[in-house]
Length: 332
Image (cartoon, rainbow, N blue to C red):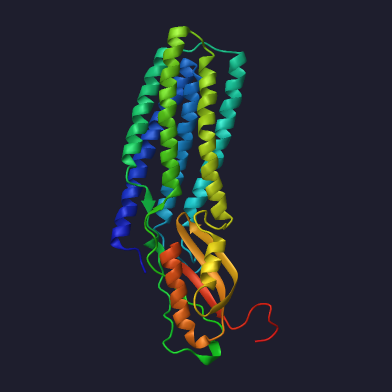
């Protein structure tokens, strides 16, 4: 099934929004870096570092959105959904390293504070606050992505069951995926924008305190605080990305519960080689060998299994192989 006109429109709209946000962030990032060196504020440079990561991360999100429009190929049979996960992984690594570098530089400044020009620092931070709020506004409504874009059409199961193939039936069902699933790149972009909004507020307050107290140590302490604030959230995004890349069982799915549910389907006597993984965020897949003794009911059992997976566990991409013997049996 080719991309629908609706999905193409949605994807193109998301791409335009990402381009607008990239333009805003890149422009302000240059201003903030120059202002950081001019004022001597490490907090501004730290915020510019986050802005650099934001810009890079959203650029990757843009690339992922463009690649998600591409159809599945004989080489990339699942399409290019994993581009989103790779982008999130790279972005998380870069932001983590950047935060560590800023913490190290801030630690050195605590013992060797430098003069900070607080007024320009406050003004630039206010501009940054406005830019990030605008960026969040532009990305509003981009909470989800639709996985139907790369649906492929599979061969239908023949009406009559071939006696020679009763032991192995490999239907590949792919219906409407759950369209309301989080896009990790958009999630990451919003997370970074939110952190920068909080960071801008922190820089504004820090600049006000420096102007009132003339205590220069406030700037490096603020820089450390900004970096520590984002690290746990980056870790969470990194953990999700790695888990999907390692094809782990989705966090919202219970392996044992699905296994027991399959065993409770009428006619099923065993389940083995059960695998559950995510192709990308929110798009889950399953494969399993199902043992049944009465192969005349194969299609009815397959329908029951797929209906169970779709309705109860929201797994719409399943490959089930029927077996007439348990793996421990030595003969059929």
